[in-house]
Amino acid sequence: MSNPTAAMLVIGDEILSGRTRDANMYYLAGELAKHGVDLREVRVVSDDPEAIISAVTALSQGHDHVFTSGGIGPTHDDITADCIAQAFGMTIDVRDDARAILEAHYATTGTDLNAARLRMARIPEGATLIENPVSSAPGFTVKNVHVMAGVPSVFQAMVASVLATVVGGAPLLSQTLRVDRGEGEIASTLAALAEKHPDLSIGCYPFQVNGAFGANVVVRGIDGGEVDAAVTALARDLDL
Amino acid sequence: MSNPTAAMLVIGDEILSGRTRDANMYYLAGELAKHGVDLREVRVVSDDPEAIISAVTALSQGHDHVFTSGGIGPTHDDITADCIAQAFGMTIDVRDDARAILEAHYATTGTDLNAARLRMARIPEGATLIENPVSSAPGFTVKNVHVMAGVPSVFQAMVASVLATVVGGAPLLSQTLRVDRGEGEIASTLAALAEKHPDLSIGCYPFQVNGAFGANVVVRGIDGGEVDAAVTALARDLDL
Image (cartoon, rainbow over all chains, first blue to last red):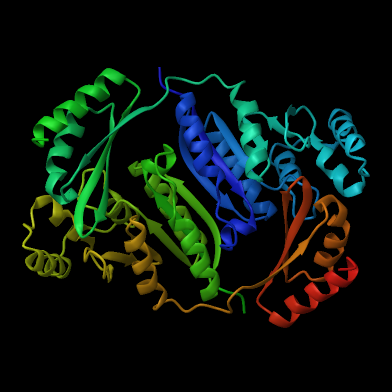
């Protein structure tokens, strides 16, 4: 049985304008690999309703899970929740359960739950809330789409909440063999190995250190025995 | 007149499996902003022909320029050039001009131009070569798609080669105002400012330092005078 598939949608002008270096993609990719969920595609779009709606619709149809990051705060540019509702034809308004969470949080900090902050309780009808142990304002899951914050510490906490509910498959295992030769030197050996092991992914990532060429060969698969065997055979074929 | 638009396509299993942290997206986003090209969307796909062909077709139709990174080396998993040719219905084979570049390069290093390395001279008919001053194997431009290497030093050199040929618009200017208040506190002021300046993008990026909340407000636009005026008005409205 193959693993469930996933896509990620990163929402935010700050990534596309080069101001902010995205950190959530790398984090999510690592967590999904450990959890046995195959991340197949990532898209980054701006804070534009049409772009968000069209991306989330396409990704939701093509994958078992979609993870979004960004655009669920209190300011005018936080439009993700409304776009998700629109994408699925759902109504959206301030919801009592989300409002109660914010009220409890702001009561302890002595902060006013003003109109802007209350926007964070706008949740589509029928959505399941995602716990936010960092700053309380919840994310939510609609159908197969998990809507999470862009701030990395909050995103990471929400990913943990969601993955506890997602049935994963076999984790992707990988082994790396460092070869101190240019990749052009070992390419035919790698191609033969890849042909012999169609269930493994065999990647070759070149590097250059002090003017000398080398490559890291990464063998990935869910059958640890086959990964082992392939790496052993490769080392032998390359006289390592 | 509005700026030309662009999309980026990152190709590689190593990003989606969480092994490698992509560095090229952040670099390209910054260069395009300086050059007056609006980066509207980024997609990351795996080393899968169907995924590459479908993404490059969609992005090429929707934007003035598409920049790809990854998958043009000598190994079996380097399938980008063939996929691009297939996406545009072009033939592809080892091309004499690209082969001459590789021959000259490998002659100076005393390295054999074997079958694997010769794969890097496979270039679609009619494509324009992109210079690679780092390791010689060229990228290429087909229609509005610029096909470049994934290794960051090579990618960056190729971006410089391509941008020298791309007519940009007005560079995106930005100013940041740090506000030591939670974003829920300043959200209504920002919303009013955004409504008053529909040509500016006004983003709010929260942070937390030593338990205190703050936010960086970033005002972006191509009219420097309007960016100035908006930031000045914002500081006044927030009593800064």
